[in-house]
Structures are given as C-alpha cells and as structure tokens.
Length: 77
Figure 1 (cartoon, rainbow, N blue to C red):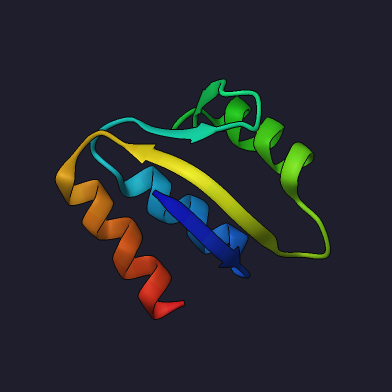
Figure 2: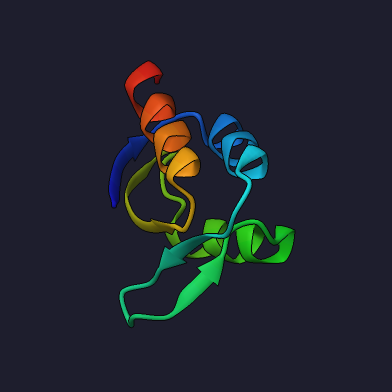
C-alpha cells in the first residue's frame, strides 16, 4: 500500500508500534525494512524525512487488522 503526506511522524510510528504483525517499508531499491524495529525506524527517517513531512511511503502490512489500522490513521490525519 502507498501512504502519502504523513505530517505527524511521531503518531505514525505509534500506530506502527500498535500493529500486531510485521509492517515493512519498501525502499526504492526493493529492500524491505521492518518498521517495528526502532533501528529501522531511525534509518528510514534519516533516508526519507524532509521538511517535517514524509511525502510518500510504500508499506507492506502482513495482518489485515494492521492494514485497517494504517488506513484509519491516514483518514484521521
């Protein structure tokens, strides 16, 4: 799933932490970073963070309820 225009990055990672299964960030090179890992969160922030906003991410959530949680976050943002 593609997620765009994340303005509240702290809240975004709180939602990721609440997910039950694995949530992965797909890089432009096709690598997958497990966003449940704090180290991966910091690495991903360093690579994609610009102007206090994340313009676009491609995520893979392995649990249906996690997909729903991420969609709810995006709608409520």
